[in-house]
Image (cartoon, rainbow, N blue to C red; front, side, top):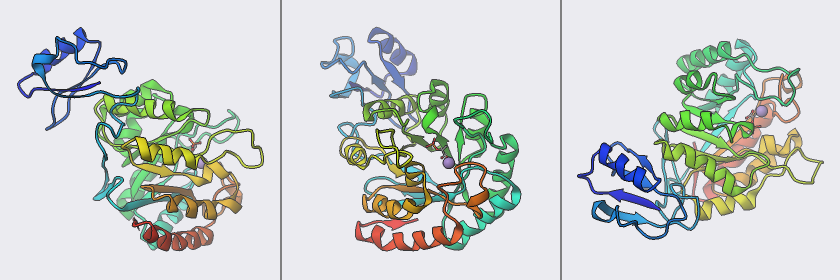
Length: 332
Ligand code: PEP
Ligand code: MN
């Protein structure tokens, strides 16, 4: 249950009431002081009655992300508004990893030439093997900071563990929490305390309830700027890397209020399927699309098999525009 307290209630009193009801206090700038009670609670406790302005009872542990509470949450990236009813689909392109200044500048130049405003690239890579390239770390972050300055692009980059979470939050315009980090509570809580937009990727072994519950950690920490990213789940199928769960996307659209971003690159795992999947993703009418592209994918240090080369990315990008228009959206 989500309880809006009366405006006369101060933080100290809210914390007292929270302790009485095993609730979390959510302080929001300019908004009401909110208590989030355990979801099993269906009737307003007597202790809260005199202090309550409004309350919302939920069906499940999906509370702040539920559209029973708020129909649409809006995430702001630069001056672009992303939300169900905002009509924008954010194109996110770039390589899997930052590898060198030459490589990341070539990627930035491609984005600028296509009018794309958001560049992705990882510096802290959550690799499956300790013997694979682990990313350039802080050196890569500094390159991304320089790229933003030189090209005016928004930067999305991922956080792998809590040792560098504050560095990434400080630098990125959008903080990516990768599939393998979806359950890392220290990352989720640190992002909850920041005001940076967060792209939360679905763990490939997580169901939809677990996915949205991870988002609830960020939302209940006080950061409402959360986007959900479907990037493929593990199924019995071995021919493709993962299985992109578009049924899950329809579910998230129906029951949650958060912007949705789709990532066909990691789902497919192979270049040949990425462009057609990207078109299917945009046709779902989502708020964002993430596609990996590399100046020379054959020599990419991570995810070499799935990254599009620049001509392939360019062709795909142009083919997406009419599809976005057909579902009432503009690719930004
Ligand atoms: C990535 O975006 O490069 C990445 C590692 O993604 P995921 O966490 O979805 O595997
Ligand atoms: Mn990748």
